[in-house]
Image 1 (cartoon, rainbow, N blue to C red):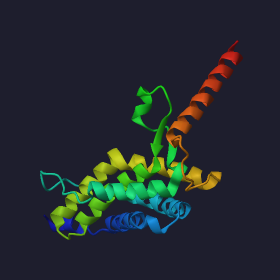
Image 2 (tube, rainbow, N blue to C red; image 1 turned 90 degrees about the vertical axis):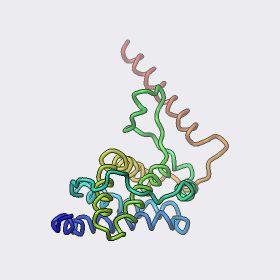
Image 3 (tube, helix red, strand yellow; image 1 turned 135 degrees about the horizontal axis):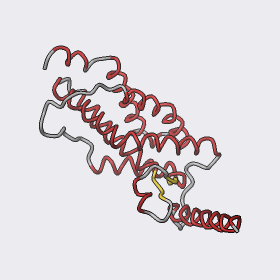
Image 4 (cartoon, helix red, strand yellow; image 1 turned 60 degrees about the vertical axis):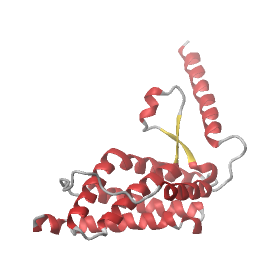
Length: 208
C-alpha cells in the first residue's frame, strides 16, 4: 500500500470519526450504569457528530477480496439490546416514517430504539476493533466497509433514532417506564389505527 493511502488512514477526519465511534460504543457498553434519560442526552450530543464525520470518510477501494472479520457476537448484541430496552421501557417503541416496510404495510410501522442503537453499535464496534489493529490493509478495508454500511444501512438508523430521541427528551414522555401486559407496540398500533380511522372519517365528512 502506497504512503499516500497509508497517511490518509491517520487523517484528522478518520481519527475523529474513530474517536466518536469508540465513545458511542463505550457508552452503550456501560448503559447499565446510566438511567435512560441520561443515556439519551449523551447520545443526542454524540450521534450528530458521528453522522457528520461519517459523511467525510474518504472513498477507498478494498484491499482484500474476502469480507472483514466480525467481532460482535450474537450474545454481545443481545446483552446491549436487552439493557437498552430495559432502560427505555415503554419509550423504546416509536413510529417510523422512513422504512421500506411502509410501502407494503396497511398499518403504521413501528421501530425499536434499542434495536436501532444496537445495530449501529455492532457496525461501529467491528470497525473500531479492525482500525485499532494498526495494519494498513485491515484499517483501509475497515474504513471502506464502514462508509459503505453508513450509506446503505446504519446512517438511516442513526437519523431515525435521533428523531425519536429528540421527541422523547422534549415531549416530557416518561423514559424507563415498564410496559404493561399489552405490548407497547400493540398499544401504539391500536392508537394509530384509531387516529387514522378518525382522520379518514373527518376527511369524508369534510368532502361531502
